[in-house]
Amino acid sequence: QVQLVESGGGSVQPGGSLRLSCAASGSFSGISFMRWHRQAPGKERELVAAISSGATTNYADSVKGRFTISRDNAKNTAYLQMGSLKPEDTAVYYCSVLVGGRTYWGQGTQVTVSS
Image: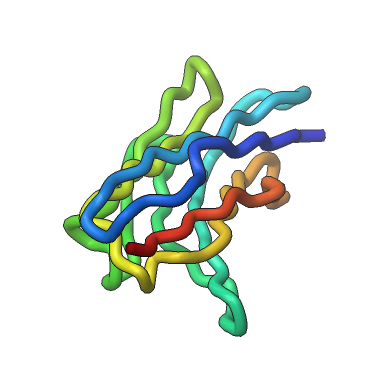
């Protein structure tokens, strides 16, 4: 089993920054992909960013150049540095990890961008 704990969400003004963290714990030997997703009210969950075990990254077009995903393998933790935030970035952000062919999800953390 893998448990994920997300942190770092909150409220910020447009143009501001936030850093989300996702710490994985449990009994596992390694994490392949670590991903961040988000779900805004009334919308489907969407993939925001992903990072492989080899640190290859990819991003949704809507966040390219503004968000950066990274990971610390020693801490089994993924990060999402979000900058130049816009009101449309408001959503619940979830992390997921792929371990042994199975995907595990965090509980989500709210990000609100508003003036």
